[in-house]
Length: 212
Image (cartoon, rainbow, N blue to C red; front, side, top):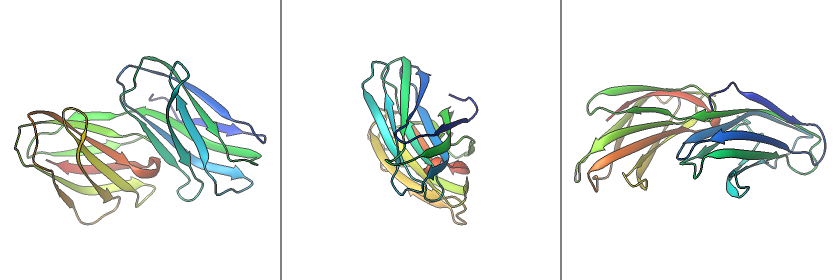
């Protein structure tokens, strides 16, 4: 995770591409596939399936060539340490497939109440994971502003997780939005450390300001 984007391609009908990566127990990783091209043109997706070190299934995503010809996949809290594999399978009848693969660790940080955090997600498929300390019954708001994405006008999803990892609530903002988004977080159910995941759609890179 963190290496330069890797070109990937196939050159024959029925051919697949297999990539390996080393993951740590509990690690959060983001996968991005950009610049997807298929010959001949095909509206069906490139299948991306991730397998655990023991060969069992972990997760998958379908990636399409329609604009922006990119996709992303979140791999949260990896279950074991070891070498994972990723198999990219173009749709049936494809004679050539190409794209660029990125694998990234989350951008991490913490929010301070009343202070704006400027967050930059600089790699395709990357996410940001920020934490804050909360008290049971506390009512907080998230202000999202100055959101930009490349490609332009992609959605940035923002999800708040409870200390046990379950979802508390979510919102979103469009890259390039001129108006800020103010999200009233549901009353905090317990005292502990909460996390906020910021996930740009379609493997976009992004920047935005977040005020808790």
